Amino acid sequence: YARPFVRLDLEASLRQVDNRLAARRIAAPTLVVAAGKDDTTPAWMGKRIFDAIPHENKRLLMLDEAGHNNALRSQGAIESYCKFVQAL
Image (cartoon, rainbow, N blue to C red; front, side, top):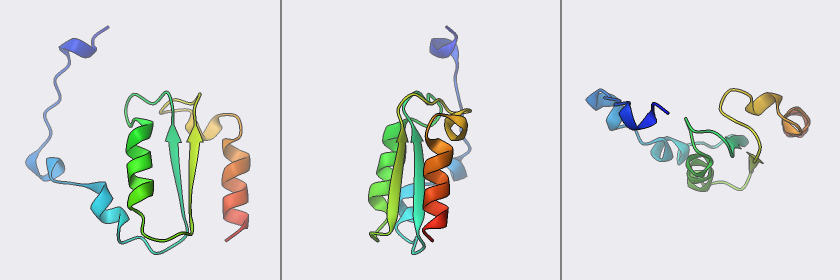
């Protein structure tokens, strides 16, 4: 309801941050978690970060029914996370 009336001003230093640039420097095995019902960090942003990671030892965990605050507690998230960590 309030979304059309909310204004968010970011400091200049934060407006200049592009996480895709940082992702290009990642060399370690990487798990990117994206939640389909996340209005704070939309899933497409997670996909862009995933795509920017240059190596193949990466995984995108797309949780279609999860939101921003419950993604890691959603169905399948814990199992997928544990499988990723155990494979390291």
